[in-house]
Length: 269
Image (cartoon, rainbow, N blue to C red):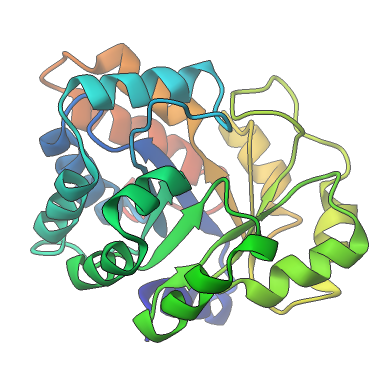
């Protein structure tokens, strides 16, 4: 069974909320990415999203744009990210999603990328700029690969399009709780409960809510209305702050542990 599907099944059986982490691959370098992945697994992170660095990350706010820039500066490429996942798989079975822009898949070769991602140990792809209406070839290749197609639903997504998006999805649906780009926020959206209910009217897939969660209190509040929460920019900001510190991994891990504590007891307190 796909690791994402299995993880959410395990969480449901234990009545636990999932915790999804986003970081930029290669920020500050791919070895740090490998070490962070293994450390996150040990403290109970349920899914790791790795952002594949891209020169024009239009869906991302400044924090994640700078992470992509640092990833590119460290020499990170799609083949390098896949090699890093292979290295992670020697020590960890943490479910991994690649957060990627379609241009990179197109240039690599769509069929070859999907096959190589599956062989490397990737569990799902979230292609930021590929709407399901234009994803027929992608969907045709993804289904036999065993990879989950992760799709985004926004606060402005109309009802008929929610139904269409979730029909294509697998693993979980990513609900972006705010309009605009990624980034930390001082408050969380007030319509999360309404939107997650609307999405669940069309699918039994778990919903992971992200965009803006930056502290344990926000994590606890958002988790009341979803199967999982996603934290990205706040963690990426920690990586930026400690990137040259030899204690980068333990410091970032401690921060992530504090966020997990907002929704459940951490695996290693």
